[in-house]
Structure formats: structure tokens, C-alpha cells
Image (tube, rainbow, N blue to C red; front, side, top):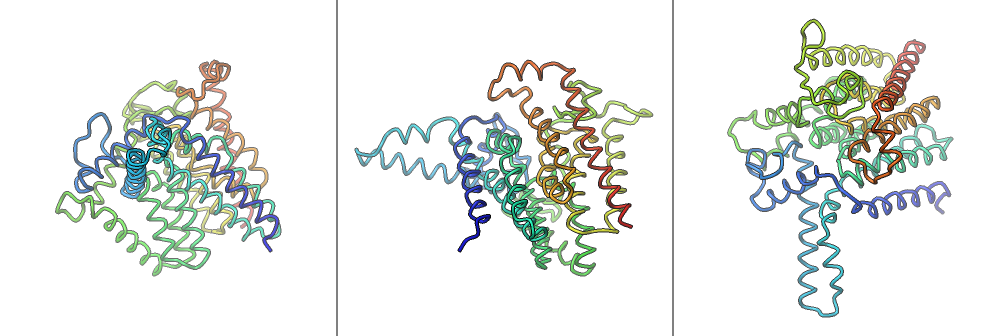
Length: 427
């Protein structure tokens, strides 16, 4: 007989999925026009040359192939469904015409392209539950609560279900890679992590942590095999897009999208971070001198690199899962605060790892709440959906945005200090 906690978890997943499906047609950002446009172009003209061809009214593809495959599949399903619906409507008088009108609503096709983010959200919720059921088996309700705290976080819904961004897609694969390591499926773990890298380039920020963990848990030989497999998968998924004879084309294309994928070179691309305090979210290039005539982007990268290396070295003494979760929460949080060219949604990768870390260190729940509130406010700012006049008025004052940045900075600093203290005290 199914345990009560398991039944509750199934109900939780159903509620989280149905709620997302229901809200998926509520609105969408113009960013989804890119996703739909890339998919339609691939369906019409094939995948070869998709990264290099001209697009009217939208950007060229900025995401790696797995994201493009997801967008293309979702759009193909939509096209097939509307084609079947129109055929049935023409040939069977009893067929409800209102269904045709529903499919043709402006929000419906973009909603299909939200499917990958929605199902990735659910997958992350499942992995959070399974991780905590395994590592904290004596507290099954905590696993249920932690999963619910992620799945019903308004900021998570806003990013994937309302906006339609795919931040959760690579996060699912990263969590899956760690689950596979725990299950002693080391080479599949590397393939899962490669899938994350091939879903969104920003995932590369997690690579040093995964590499260190792989070396510590699998050893050099298996890690080397895993890295070779990652490269093989890279070439395999890029193969349908090849336009050059150069064997380095997939690598150069991938790296080029890392440099240009954000679509801007702004010091702060609407992120409530430390740089925003100096620019007030103005569109200023990060090539502007900051310290000793060095560009802001160079200063930010150097500062983040030093912090990253110090935190990574601390992991070596205690590479357990608790510390892996903790470090994978701290790294993207620091990146969001310190690096330039940050979008508001780039704080999203912090949340699933912070939930897992907070399950082991309850003091982090307050950090999770504070980070989620500021993140949601940042997502809401300037888009204003749904319109809530008092909130819009409050967020339109720079003094209040400054307060939110201070709160987020304090929360991230607390995360980093607790992580360092835990690592040092354990020696």
C-alpha cells in the first residue's frame, strides 16, 4: 500500500503541473517570439545553417541545440494539433469550432514552448524529494515540504510558466547528474551534465564544481572518460546544425554564444545586483573603466574568479552532498551579484540548490525566502504582469530597489559565510 507521504507527494506534483498548465496561457514575454521563430525556421528550412541564417524581427539562435530541439518539438506538436483540429472542424459538423479558436489564440503557441520549462520544474521537484528521502530518510515530511517550497515558489512559476524562460531545463540535468553519481552511474552522470551545458550556456558556471566532485568521487580515469563522452555528445547534438567543415565549429559556435548570448554588454542588464547600485539600471557598457582604468567586465570577472576558486578549494576537504548543494547555491548567487551582463532571471539557478542546502541547515530558510522575494520583485519590475498598482508604485522608487539589493546582498553574504564557516569548522 502506498505510504501517506508518497500519496501526498503525487498529489503535490499533480497540483503543481495542473496549475502551471492552467497559467501557461495567461501571458508571455516577447522573448518567446525568438523561441517560436527559431523553431518555425528549423521546421521550414531544416536545422542545417540555423545558427547562421538571417531571421526577420528576431535574434539569431542564442541557445545550444538541446534547447532548439525542445522548442522545435513543442512547435511541431502545436502545428500538428492545430492541423488535426482544422481538418476535423472542416469534415465533421459536430466538431466544436470553439476549440479551433482556442488553439489560434495568441498565447497558445508560446504556451507549448513553455512545456519544457514546466516539466523541468516538476522534474526538479521530484529530484529534490528523492535526494532528501535518501539522505534524510528519517524525515520524509521534510522531503515533501522542501519539494513543495520549490514547486510552489511564485518566482519559479513566474520564470517558467508566465515568462516562459527555460532556466529550469539545465538545472534539472545538473541535479540529475548528481543523482546519477550517487547511484554510481558515473558515465551517465557526465552525459546528464553535458545535457545541461547543451541546454543553456550559462550552466558552464557549475562545471568546475561538477568536475571537482567527479575527480573526488570517480577518480581521474573515469572523469577523463566522462569528459570525452561530454565532447562526443557535444558533436552529436551539433551535427544536424553543421555549416562549416572545421572540426572546431561546434566549439567555436558554443563559445561565441557564451560571449553574445545575453544580447547586450550592459554592466547590469536589469539585474538587482551590486553593479546596479552604480548604474541605476541604466544601459551602460561593461567596457567602461571601473578600477585602475580596467573595464567593469574585467574587474567583475577577476573578483568572481578569485571568490570561486577560494570556495571551491574549501570543498575539497568535505565533498559530501550537503556541501555540493550548498556550493552550487552560493556560486550562482555570487555570480548574480558580482558579474556584469546579468539578467534578472539569472538568480533562478540558486533556488533548487538553496532548498536542498536549507534542508540540512535550517538557518538558510530565511535566506531562501529573502532571495525568492527579491528575485520575484526583480522579475516583475518593468514587465508589470499582472498589473498591481501599489506594487508597481513601490517598485518604481529607486530607494526601494536599493533596499532590495541590500537585502539580497546580505542574504548572499550570509550564505557564503555559513558555507565557509561550516567547511573550516569541520577540519
